[in-house]
Length: 243
Ligand SMILES: [Zn+2]
Ligand SMILES: [Zn+2]
Image (cartoon, rainbow, N blue to C red):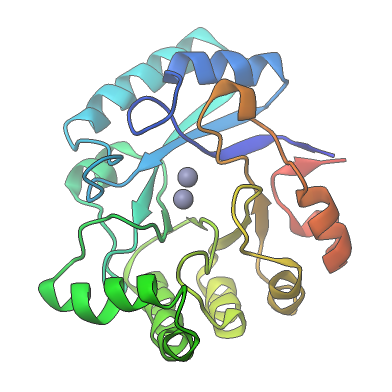
């Protein structure tokens, strides 16, 4: 089992170790048919792509697509979910230059509003160690994911529910409705086996991506083949892998 199109990879434009060209070269070496460069969204003060760099990234990718005919290279961004109302950090540059948008929850982003600091960012951070808070944030977070899918044209949700606990059932239902792919990510704990079992009751697509931050990790599925086996999900439901 291998990844055919690695849809989630990072480069030096955020906090990856390798350049776009090096990642693409490695992708060719390991036989990927396609690779998507998806560095972090702009609202992360340490990792976010500076908005003026999207045009530069687009030009680099266009040149590489001209140069190689054995791999397709796409530009995306792993935008940050920044507000309880489903806000994500994309602006005109991302919309103009990216082939498609993915979104995920991370720590350390700048929340969409002052209110979101107190009702969204801090409670999600504190919920890691306070079980009573965890219950409270699940309802809010589930609504956040659904609102995000209603508001934005997103192709993929990266590590759904990671660092931001959710009720997977309504999220999977909404993802199926909006045609959003749910990611199975080898570097994160979610989606886990139980969540995949629930999500697969709905006609939603899944993808396994390496989330590589260096050439060494590109295409690396780690333990995800065991995860999907344990969940009993047919390979045909995972859009970017081959036997
Ligand atoms: Zn991520
Ligand atoms: Zn990532």
